[in-house]
Image (tube, rainbow, N blue to C red; front, top):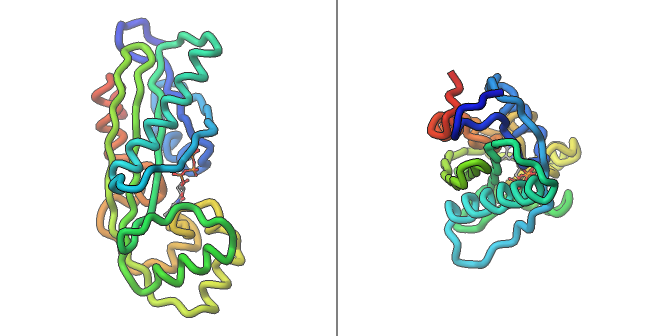
Length: 206
Ligand SMILES: Cc1cn([C@H]2C[C@H](O)[C@@H](COP(=O)(O)OP(=O)(O)OP(=O)(O)O)O2)c(=O)[nH]c1=O
């Protein structure tokens, strides 16, 4: 714990995503990390660009967690991190599938083509009032996939809690022929960008 002004003494991850929790842990930060998922409304008005969607939803998640801390009377100087990931194909935003049939439909659209994955992140300093949002985009190309392969993949259950109905960090890797850009952005937390944002807030990773 540090007592320097403007240096946070804790990172609060406003996420229920096990991937995001593992990725933050992989940074081996000197600060303790506290997990505080929120129940944030992820509906968005039409007309927002993909970048606006992921940045504003990450802001919503981080603000919701900051509000929970304040309501609990928690005054530990903290950086609160929210994140959001979407898949975009032909201008359509593909979030998490509603069910298995939806996942199959999504993968039938994605197979044999390239799509874009956007992840946005927001850091809020509860001790400074700073709110900083940014995003990254990664292009992912999927192999041509026959219907049986898609059905077998969906039957594993892996796609059900993931934007675009696949997980590149799991069996989904076998569906992908290439990516351009940050791999961790596809998994839900662009670590290179996050390290820059943390350094700006007084928490260098290295
Ligand atoms: C494309 C892709 C997405 N995903 C995941 C990352 C996110 O967890 C999820 C997108 O949904 P999000 O709404 O961004 O996140 P979440 O609801 O899982 O968690 P929280 O809002 O509490 O932080 O999709 C993968 O794990 N691998 C992939 O290859």
